[in-house]
Length: 194
Image 1 (cartoon, rainbow, N blue to C red):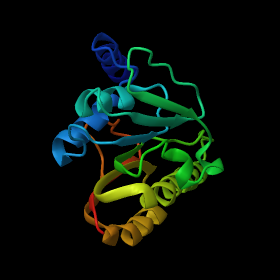
Image 2: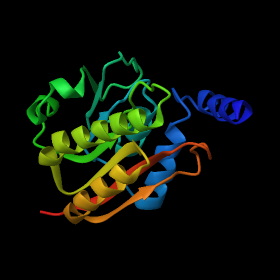
Image 3: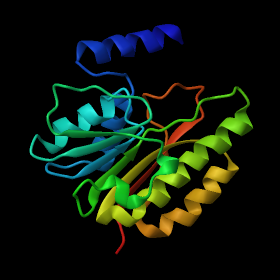
Image 4: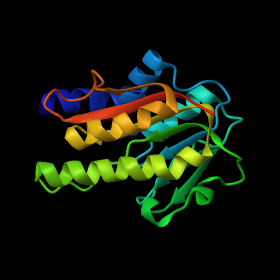
């Protein structure tokens, strides 16, 4: 397991990315066409910055990406980033806009501080995903796309059922880049309905 992590961490470093998690987003983007040139993007749980880096490369330098995390993120090489240090539970939808009317894409790679108790961690993870959705759905454009990391469980499946009708397509997806033993999955939703 450590060899697996080290290999892809080294690959990310070699390619200039802050973390190996970039390959999960890259895989989902290639499969589901999440990001397009000139899309406006909101990246929640952006630290250390690999998802923001990837999104910036896809959408291009003319579009500003808003990135949010409790931890400070430094990407001085990217001039099209607005970093907003905050706990999302202290925010409302309007706090995230930064002069934009809405976003084409919302990405959330947020994760709770784990306790080692699976049920507790799963509930905390789902709570983050629910907050990400509730906070950003009002500012996600029609036909917009949404990705959110969450830990698998019965409550997760139940929540997904309630969200599905708001999108043309949605599913829980486990990237090949995720560790086999991990219960981490991503709720991938495309084509927000008007």
